[in-house]
Image (cartoon, rainbow, N blue to C red; front, side, top):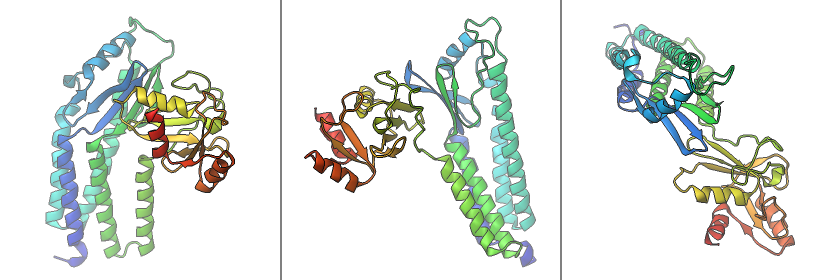
Length: 342
């Protein structure tokens, strides 16, 4: 076989791993849609597997009944019959490309997988559009001009529900399979000298940035004098005392005082923790991670709800302020320990 037309052992290994990723996706949920609302503090979840719907399907159907959305039933989706077979076919295609070893087959596998990804997302969007727009005109709750289409990816507010649509384990396995295919193709293009070495590094850098941005859990900007504190319901007006809790599910809670955030989290110990942010005492409208911030607690600090806690980005800044008030600097762990003991 002409060596210029065959793929390397590394590319073959990556293809086999990509095939295993697709097979593994058959046994875990591929996509998740979470619904959060005050009456459901832990949220409702809809999981989309290759061959079924799972999660709080019956509860969601009950809620959808009031706004006129169709019930969700596995039998209504031909995709649940076809998708498992399609996934197996692609897994076999990847294996065939690895065993056959022809470069053209590798390129064909990548092109076919990209087409599959596009078609799948378009079909998913059409499914969401149909359920969100084609409502029963005799529904108990009718809001003129309102549609209930969930987001394809990310967050969307639907009445009093916050809807989050994100890949689940199977979705990330799909992404990993695609990434491995792209790496294989670039390895082979590099061997064939069709690209310059620097471009390979650039592509990896771009892909890394895109993947890291998908998992971004940074703070959500607070709309001062518009957003209300989740705990005390008062308007959030002072940025240096504002705090924020983003749960592991992506639900965002905002507060006007550290005391409110800690009281709220203490009230809901069953909710999964996530990331916590607090206003920088020395810089307006800047939220910093509580894990890396330094705190000073003193009765002279007049925060909205009497928490008396100021957060600083740098330890030196906190130390200087603490020295002025004859107190000490606290870390996030130390601050929580003190407050939980009170």
